[in-house]
Every structure is written in structure tokens, then in C-alpha cells.
Image 1 (tube, rainbow, N blue to C red):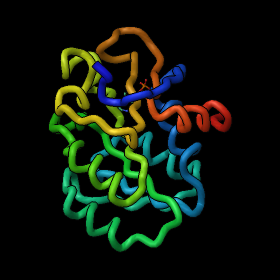
Image 2 (cartoon, rainbow, N blue to C red):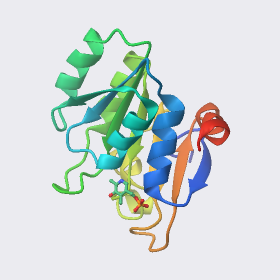
Image 3 (cartoon, rainbow, N blue to C red):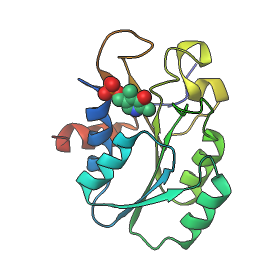
Image 4 (cartoon, helix red, strand yellow):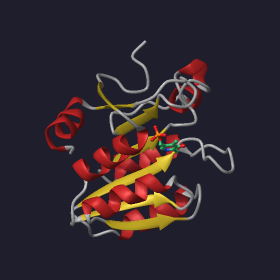
Length: 169
Ligand SMILES: *Cc1c(COP(=O)(O)O)cnc(C)c1O
């Protein structure tokens, strides 16, 4: 079984907050548009500020609205960022469709699975729950929630993890 992230590498952080800041500031710069679900955890937005990227928020869970914005985007690079399980509503992001859009529009898909890891998909998280597999996913999971300890991991394409290792503060 290759899992949701074939060939992925991972790196750990002391908190999920720092992991999200590291992902976004490593993959985005002033010329990046970050397309974020309106109900995302605030730390993804802090990452956008740190990277000085342009933050574009789409209607909650609305992959059609996201598709229209991506089609209109002229940015040099694009990230899509979403919580996998939304912490206030408890619903799931349409990760299959988001992964398809990431592929179509040459973007990374940052998935914050703080609330799915250890709970859904037999513990493997929301990607496993929904049967989504994509090399464009940058998966963040906290260890301070279901796992009951502290810290976080980022699992992604080896080139993404190497970029994070080399550039994250
Ligand atoms: C808790 C949480 C974080 C931050 O994780 P910490 O390890 O507590 O820093 C990030 N994203 C989401 C969606 C969370 O619920």
C-alpha cells in the first residue's frame, strides 16, 4: 500500500502552528497567490502574511468558486490551502476535487489534517478516509490532538520537504 502520498518524505516540527508557517513561507513568496478556504484555521493565514503572498479566500468548501478563481489567476505560482476537517463545523473539505484542481492549475495543495489524523481513515487521516492520493498534496498533521503528545509532521513530495528543510526558519 503506497498511501495517499506516494514517495513522500516527512519532517517534524515542535507545533502545528510552526509547521504551517514553515510550509507556506517555504512554498510561497510575493508572487504567489494562496487560495484558502474561508473557514481555515488562522495559522494558514499567518503563513501567507509571513510569505508576503496574496491571500485569496474562497467560499467555504466551494470547489466551483475556487476553480473560477484559479482560472482567472495570473500569479506566477499558486497554493491551495485547506483544513481537511473544519474545526468549527466538523465537515470535510472536498479533497478529491481540490487535488484535481491543484493538478489542473499547477498548484500545491496544502492540507491541514489537525482534526483528521488519528481519527479518520483508520487513523491515517482524511486523505485515507476519502481515498484521495496525489503527489501535489502537502500534508500537515498535528501530534498534539488525537495523538495526545506534541509536535507536528509535514509529509510531501521529497522536493517540497527538502525546500522546507532548507528554508524554514
Ligand atoms: C490545533 C490546530 C493547529 C495548530 O496545531 P498546534 O500543534 O496546536 O500548534 C493547526 N491547524 C488546525 C486546523 C488546528 O486545529
